[in-house]
Length: 209
Image (spheres, rainbow, N blue to C red):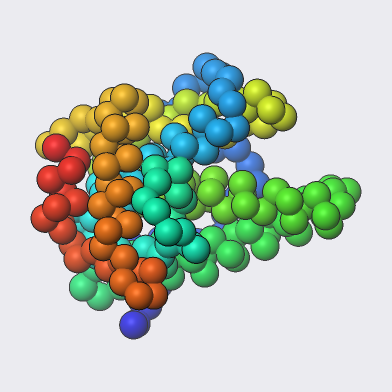
């Protein structure tokens, strides 16, 4: 697969201050508090919705972990997002971003053990931010709200609505349709626990409407 860094799809691979909270248009300053489990389940549905929306524009390859049953609480690895000419190696890009975040935390006095514990949360956050960035690149409006986890008062961003030219998804629909998409993606996994979704995959797109 060839990677052409000068094409529009790939401008999001440029280095940025990844440790800073995301701000700007579309972000609510209201902070709601939820349990860690509730946040994680919602983030998995959110990821599934963003994958479904981006599949309207791109080919996407995802990978499952060591799971045996389909659940809406499984967070996926996104290996590649591509069009006819360009490929984003998403998993590699996320690893590079996490490495920068970990280095920044260590410089600020965080212990190596603590930085390591935070890695999984960073992966999820950066993966979702990347998907949101690509959605916005294609003119999709994403409404995001800052939320706190009751367990440790950490903050994260959750998508509360997705607006395209064809449809709008509310928070409730993100949960219900995201869960259905998670189950469908699991059913498509091959022996390598991977699922290749050609652009505008028929079943996946139908689950969005």
